[in-house]
Length: 171
Image 1 (cartoon, helix red, strand yellow):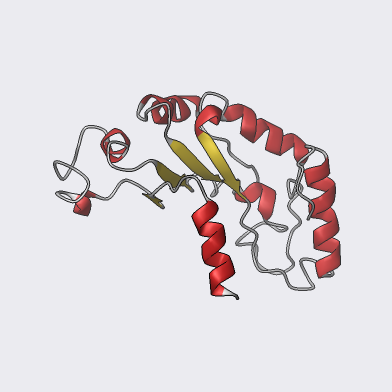
Image 2: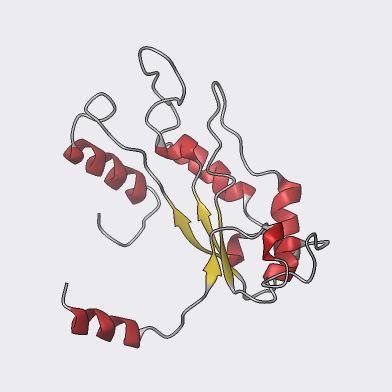
C-alpha cells in the first residue's frame, strides 16, 4: 500500500457519510437517543447520522424457503428517515450461500444461489426504499471445494449474474 496515493484518493472524495452497522441499541441513551426506548429508534438515529447498514434481510434462507422484506417494514424505514438518508443493505443470504445452512450430513444445494429472479424480487420488495439505497452488499460464506470447485468457477458465476443486470464494473 502506498499511503500518499491512498490519501490522495480520499482527498478527492466529495462526501463522507458517517453511520453504524445498526441502530437499535437501548444502551445508546444519551449518545444517540434521548431515552432508553425512543418511540422510533431509526427516526432518532437519522437525526444524527446519514447512513446505516441493514442486515436483517440477510438472514433470509431458512430450511426450505427464503423470505423477503415485509412491505410494512420497508415503508416504515422510508418514513423514518429523511430524503437524503442512505441505506447500505446486505443482500439476502439466499442469494449468497451455495448450500442450505444447518443441514447435517451431505450439504444440500441452495437453488437461489445467485438467482437473478430472486434478486429482482428482493429489489422489488425494497422499491419504496430504493431511492435511499446507496449500496447492496453481497456477503459470501467461506468456500471450500465441496461448495465451489474453484475460485475461477465462482468468478464466472458472479460475472454471469452481474452481466444480466448490466453492471458496468468488470469482476
